[in-house]
Length: 89
Image 1 (cartoon, helix red, strand yellow):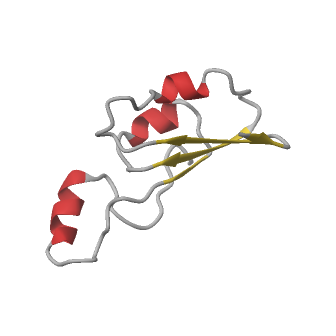
Image 2 (image 1 turned 60 degrees about the horizontal axis):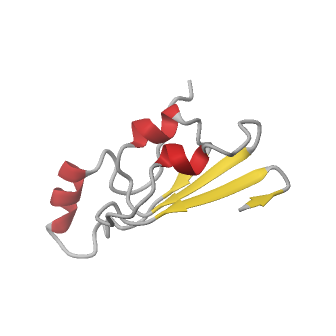
């Protein structure tokens, strides 16, 4: 979806065998646009950074809903909750 120079793209859970690659989703987007990625899980953030995505919003981790799940989430995800800046000095 593109609105006034802002492109919003989304991806399903990584367990979905039909999930499209970020490369295929971003291929036809103008790099001058502000790109927002809605990605169900915060996996492979380096891929998002490499594709020059401006903002990624992810959920799925359920961090802190049930203890000790937060410990498992910390082991799985680069950041299981909160915000992170990558590629920005």
